[in-house]
Image (cartoon, rainbow, N blue to C red; front, side):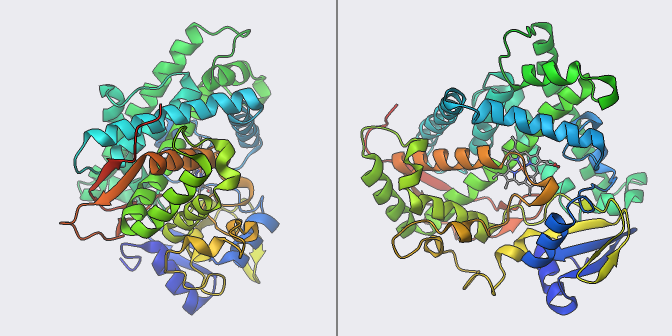
Length: 454
Ligand code: HEM
């Protein structure tokens, strides 16, 4: 009850009273909470192995058919699993100019589709279409195929993704009070729909991977699913990796790649309508660099510092992954003079780093220009201080592709459309808590800015 609706803010308040490292009791678990850049860096970088575990929470066992890499604890097998996932992402997104171009083409296709979809509606909430777009991009990498805004099976599946974030976010009740599963109560029914969602999602992914297996040709690796089949289906027995891990990995990447990227874009659209002068300034800069005869491309990035600043400020200000996925200690460890025993659950409060008044002036004010120096160039020291992808051994492995997706989609949307808020609504920045913070329902409209380039 004391955690309230926004646990990350409560954690930061408690840090003022008890220091940056303290312990709370949640249900039957003792949990250490880490706040502030120095404590988090010291734990996740200087004691990276000791803090690289995951707790054996009941909800984690239902993700990706129980063969998730993301929710698995630290082990030799996990290290191998993560390495394969990481190098496969790189191979299909940034390994050479051909893969970079092909990845960019998928993103542009989704962004253009979004422009057309938004123009068809009068006043709309963009959240679902953004989820479909982000899902299509990661599906294109994993399956070589997108599912479109009209595919019913896929849309239904995506309609429930919010439940995932609610249940695996730090502080979710069923994980710290497992006995809630044993008698009828609201948490039990939320947990039941979490299990159903994971089952449906995993069955969808498994079906696609099984189709891939049937037509698999080691000479022609079509997409990431083929790549995982090639490595994991045929891995040496001692690695412990099996066919089930192939399916688990694809499911992990699709799950991780859609909710986060779409939430980032969702916040960006809300902030554009909340601050129309920032939107105009972005449009001016994009028009100046790109002109009106072509779409923005990834090569324009080095000339669009204000857009990058807007993206970093959105990540800092909203801190939309406020607390990382829970960690656990793999052995006894001492940090800031405090002893933490092995197998302790650890929450890492990223929000506290991004809102530290010692580091950021007026942290509660949305101001993209804070990231620009006097010549209008991006201050790289400052951008690298924003903590949203976590750090250390569990750092997000999709950070590079996420940044490319968010940059290109937002550049194209802002280049092609002007977003406006519905004057009858009171536009707030209030949000719901989970693994990702999601803005409350809001409505916008989109007007075309000249002809649509295709
Ligand atoms: C803006 C978008 C994204 C944000 C803010 C984000 C953030 C995060 C965070 C905070 C974690 C947890 C780190 C920890 O527990 O310490 C994480 C883990 C992870 N992310 Fe991302 N992520 C994003 C996009 C993606 C994408 C596009 C993919 C893949 C396609 C991805 C794949 C993963 C995976 C596999 C993990 C688990 C890593 C592990 O447990 O070792 N993420 N991400």
